[in-house]
Length: 320
Ligand code: FDP
Image: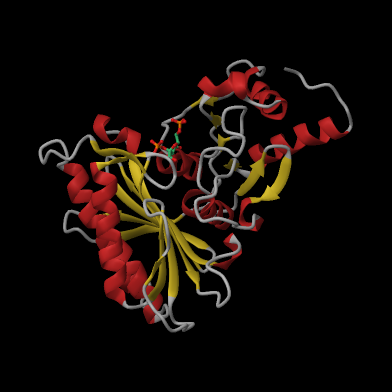
């Protein structure tokens, strides 16, 4: 069934916002698919965006496409983009029918020029009169689009994760619900940073290695691709705090909140790590470009990290 039909019972303004994101992603997909032929590889300028990353041409194009479609809905009050320094205020008057949309228009953009999976990540939240967004718990819909061998849209609506695939006719077709029940033994982390990890992370990851060849390692280096695999196959994905990045690398608002919502709604878990069991969705947003460490995956795998913390509390020596 096609996306708009599938969600035909949703609140109309919310549906319009979802449709705007789906239309944007179809345009972004078109740009990505022919990027090498259209001269869309490479950097836009050597200037860093608000998150400190160098903007690629496709980052800028994707951002413009998202802002354009979301503005046209007239159902959004505030747009928060990873590519913009400040929030974009679209409605002067407060109305509970308006939504706040936060997005990373093109995540994993270091993978663009080598044709590896990349994605758009977003969340739609009800408008809190006082603040832009205080916690991930205010998210009504979270999702991402994966531009890979095929283009997929995953959406968490009413606490259920739905999976759509883009058809030849450029329509998103529902192919099923997602429940994190895969049992593949996979750990996913950038091991090049291991010398800078803190002792909790060293102990946790070491546990995956001492069991002979029971576990395998997979790391695409594109959050959407790594999280998608985790949702479908199981295992865990982590971008921890380390000595180089004491607050982690990934953005709370644009990356961690939406992925945490999807993981939890699919029956998994998403926590801060970094000597803390705190749920990502409970972390208070103090600044829109704030970073956070993150550990997500099946309950079984995330619990293994929590066991490391318990041992630490009881002063049992880590096996490192
Ligand atoms: P990228 O730098 O390519 O834009 O937050 C961006 C992100 O990719 C994530 O998609 C990805 O998980 C992570 O950074 C990869 O970072 P490392 O290269 O440091 O592993």
